Structures are given as structure tokens and as C-alpha cells.
Image (tube, rainbow, N blue to C red; front, top):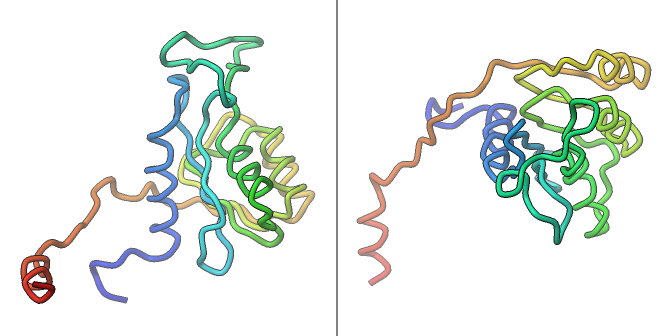
Length: 162
């Protein structure tokens, strides 16, 4: 593999990081990318339900030390597949943070077979459920935050089109 091209897992984790930039709850920015056969099925980030205000604009709605205004990134990714009729069976979830218990159960029920993360979450029940359901968890180092966009050949490609 060329030095300038990231490995697939790094690529999809970097996409999850980029997706997390759309999150609207300041308590945690999380991104999720669902992938099967190196193809992106959907993405999700944590944010308010459609039509509601955003935590970053109107404050969080805290109950039992959790913001209940937001839908988590994993759920939003699964729901996007549901809306568009895309099966998640056998997919891999690339997530910036370890899923909470509810998201873990949803990922398992959605047929996700592997979770790849780089940041842990304090919820140990999620890991127990993944083990029961035989869902593999891989923890990788956080990918670099630099996008290596190469403009070197841009001007010559543009001149050819003229």
C-alpha cells in the first residue's frame, strides 16, 4: 500500500471523526460510519431529533447525568439505513467512542458483527453484551487529524480539460 493512502480501518475511523464534527451536543461529539465490504452504508452523529432545538444552542436536557435530547451517533447511522432500506446485517461499525449500553444492544440487534473504536466510554455493560453476541471489538490508536489532500497534480489536470 502506498505511504500516502491510509489503511481501510484508519480511513473509516477518520471519516467517523469527520462525521462527529456535525454533532450538536457539546457533552460528547461522536461519529459512526457503518461499512460492509469496504462500502459506506450510512453515517451518524449525536444530535437532536429532527425539528428540535440543538443542545449547543439551547442547552442540554440532563436526566440521570445523560443528555436525553440527543440521539446517539450509532442510532442515527442505523436509522439512516432504516429510512433508505439498507440492510446492516454483517456490517462493521467504525465509531469514535465505545458505544453505550443502549447503542450496543441496537448495534447487536441490527446485525453488526464488528465494532472498531479508538476511544473508550465508561460503560462496561456494552462490552459484556458484545461478548455475549460474539461481536468483535477492535481498539485502534486514534488516527491522525490531518487530511493529506494532494493538489500537486491539480493544475495540470485542469489545463487538460480546457
